[in-house]
Length: 531
Image (cartoon, rainbow, N blue to C red; front, side, top):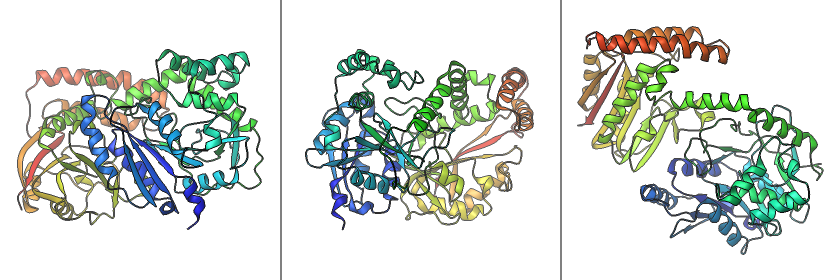
């Protein structure tokens, strides 16, 4: 064993997001040489009563982690908050180690992340010009060098030495005063491209508790450099409104590097090429028009699968999605314990289930691997689980894409415990989609026979949009497909005018005309395993 690995443990900070924490750990375990690293975990306590169960589930998962040289868990007895937890944790670890690699529970790493961190920590261990190593790089348009240095420090997958962390100043007021005195505010803000100084002012006022803005300011004032990779080795999956300082946003999304980073022949100096690329990226992402457009896009995406009433103005699948979300929410109270989401995709209905554990399974494919949301992938035949290990299963709009439905339902039956519940949705009237993998539509009688044949009994069966709205949904689906290749702005304009009017008209006609239980959009079935 190379004892150099033991110089820099991985320190992981977790709170109450089980899915995120599991993905973070799983991605670390894909790194070569991970078995040589000590993993030190700091688990923060619940801040509010509604987070107690979530924290408990995360802590239960932490006890199952293996694959590292050692795993030690520090359970906070009271809530520290992210900033205090990281500052105290990093400080404590660096009293025992000379170097540290720091990860939060919403970061997924490339398989080459640890090699990059190890190589950089060893290469610059005695170079006082370098304060830290960073794994994430912004999705800039310009081509970046293989690796480069910038003045300052950063916070998404990083590492430092004891000498580097000794320069950290937690006093935001002192930092801002010095930045102003030395006339570094413009530089701090990347030529006024990003309002970092406003973030620091907000931290001083107590509007945020960012440790990272103080780390960046401390490094910049000390005129120290941080190493970055030319291709990102870290992806932040926390911009789903689940994190402490992260709302819903996709502007920071990156593709992870699929090769190692070469640090040979790298000059230790501030890269103006990278600085200007970052500055341009910040300016573009933060101008008023782009911020307004991103806000609209975020609202649009957030309303796609869980649409509220105002989504009638911009969701082309308003009737299908609103009915599905309502039915799933209504029946979710029957889903308990350990839940398996079969064909999980992006887990769009995850928030509707209050379960002990939620595990997503998807078909092995380049798309699923790139998406990185499924907890497990399978070969299309056998689920990678033991018999009777789940209390419940969700299968949402997947069955029509399964060529061998008997084998598929038999596998769901196999992994469910006796009496386990299956919540199944499948379309009855819909266009061909995800071609060529669209194989079937099921009548009520065909679906009942198929489930009973594979050991299930139907408890509830709902037919969605069994009224005139089915016609208006099909019209909008037709129109939306016609606009798929239009420019995004044109498509959104069309959606917010023509499609919105059809949605509104559909609601009115749906209330005036009687229902028709023989013509509907989707089945939603709650079934129980009986054999």
